[in-house]
Image: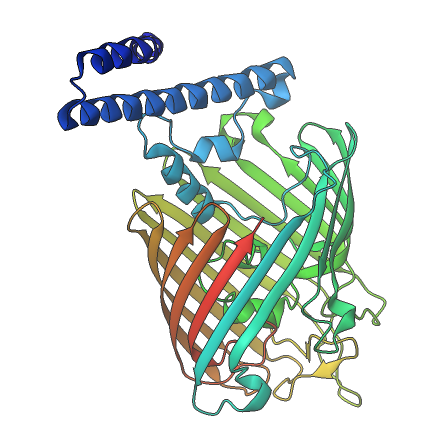
Amino acid sequence: MRWTVLLSLLLLPITLPQQARGGQLDEERIRKLETMLEQAQRQMAQLQSVMEAASRELADLKQGPSRQTLSVEAQVAPAATDPASDHRGDFARRILLPDLGGDQREHELSGRPELFIQSRYQALPINGATGEAARPNFLLTRMETRWSGKVSGKVGMGFELQYHPAPGGSSFEIVNDAFVEYYPNESTTIRAGQFVKPFGFDIQQSSSIREAPERGIFAGYFFPGQRDRGVMVIRKLDALGAPLRGVTVYGAALNGNRFFQDNNRQLNYNLRARKVFASLPLAVGISAQLGRQLLPPGVGGSNLEDYYGVDLQFVWRRLGVRGEYVAGNMPSTLIDIEPEFAPAFRPGAHSSAGAIFANVKLTRNNDIYWRYDQLNGDPVSGRNIRALNLGYFRSVGSHSRFGIDYQFKSGVTRNDDHVNTRLQLTWNVLY
């Protein structure tokens, strides 16, 4: 392949002058030259991809036995054997790999921040949705800036601000992430501060790459804000042998109490294990949270805040599938700086939820999807809420995406990420 590339590039400057002197640059020869140039460019791109992969693997080998496996990102991306492989690899990473929660050891901290803007138009409120619950017309749903990366060989950090809560009077939500990391070895990360909870897939998927307008219904009720404050240990088990290759485990001790207000003086404990089967490609995870929550004044009974979940992600050619199920104690409060107790909450009551998502990649830049989403035991209404989303989105360049989503929903929700309209037009820019 390398000789083909070099020969093609050497022939181009020789062939062009001869044809010009002979006056024979007709349309057919122009097309042939354009085709030849495109083939050479594709071959150069393939060679570059192979060289980069070999360079990464060589660096891993030099760093010792604990790094003698390719990263999960490299494993789930198909080999660069044809021009379509790069975007197929991007598709597999988007379906299989959460964008939040990973450590920063592979990224150098830069002074230039990452910028994310998400604008939306919403219309056609569902039955029963009024006022703030419907959030109609034009919105700026997310305006965020982020700095993250490694600041030295052993230390990393993440810092993210979001502006959109400020105009709504929720200034306590402006700081999204603020954490430091320590890397005692190549397989272990210790993180402390405010960060995304290690539970399931949906809450760890960034809004900048999520296909549907918002997360599943359960995410905003069980884990409002998706974040908490505390300490977490992340451990990759690749070096322990082939059966554990692709396994990552998480353990965290967190404040609890719905992210912002901690006033029960007890900690919540989160555990998660996830394995990526790169050859399929398939990923499976299990999660648990053990904790305590607040009870309304004058109410006695169980104050447990225990949740259990299982999630699965799978890619087959142009089809991506995700499924997630979560069950546990009904949340007693909604997200707020001061506790706002859910009207339908009763001590000892339970809620459960599940979502299944399917994405079909039509072309390099065009996708369609559907998602079925259900919550049993809404802590606000006490009802079972179901939603079906049908959508299309198109990548516009390498930093932007436009999407159209139509939703069928059986009732109003008041979770952190609620959408109570049928039509959503969303435009993201991430730079």
